[in-house]
Image (cartoon, rainbow, N blue to C red; front, top):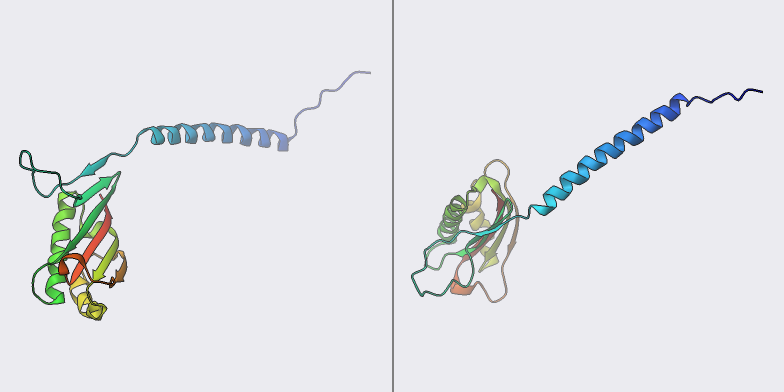
Length: 162
């Protein structure tokens, strides 16, 4: 009796083709992922002033980027004035720092607001509103026990992208 060779079914052919496509795609994804992992983001500082020869480095950076994210240190307002004036001044300073780092207020993702007195929340919001483009960032607002260092009415820090 002659042995009849069985041909693969249509379903078997489709399964084998799918496995081959997955293997090829998986290899491409793994190669791309490995390449992305070897290219480490660079940490970069954006100083607001140039150090004089022999001058000690600052205690902290005012802005640092890592990859496409930029982190801005808290900016306070250490003068007499209203909470609205203080908030406007702080936001103006943060905007300058963002521009210096290659970003903008429209690219801010997260904001932390520290109020010396939580009763200033509504008035602070009047100066805060409208500074962020069409999609405002997420925000946390607190009044830390013991106030804000430097006796500021408000301090704000943020995270943005470049």
